[in-house]
Image (tube, rainbow, N blue to C red; front, side, top):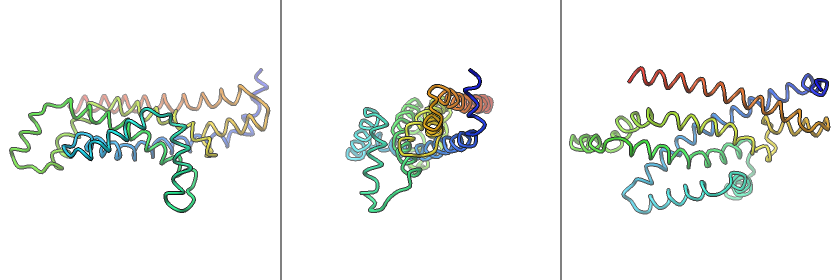
Length: 219
């Protein structure tokens, strides 16, 4: 049985390349998704009906359609929209960002709405501009409450990134599929891929737990 894993020596560099690509996809898309999520959350809570409607429609579409379908829409639609071909890695980043941004928007919205309304009212009575209230008062407090949910979204991005392998991006899943095609092995490459995803997620869980303990201590 163990002889079936002799492929690891030859294909380990490919798996390591896939590991790095997977981490890059997850981290970049969660950072960009955070910026998009903040924007969407503010739009959804806005008193401007048009902005609120746009955010609600976008979030509803993303949350109620499969990520794989969204990846193909971005893959086909983005070059048509821009008028030139787009790198597959960039396409994957865009798709994951658009996807995670919708979920992060709801996380941020719930975090903001969990805060006492009196804080905003008091800040407004002091003449503090709305953008400063949001950036300096509301968001810092909200992030303390939503950090676990944001951490779960980051871990979700790691796992969801496996779907972008359909674009030919050399992530962990693509590496496993390449090995399967080259060696005619079915299960073993997937076990290695699963182990790599597991290691990433466990490390992220430990890092996030450390951040949560520090934030509780600072509070």
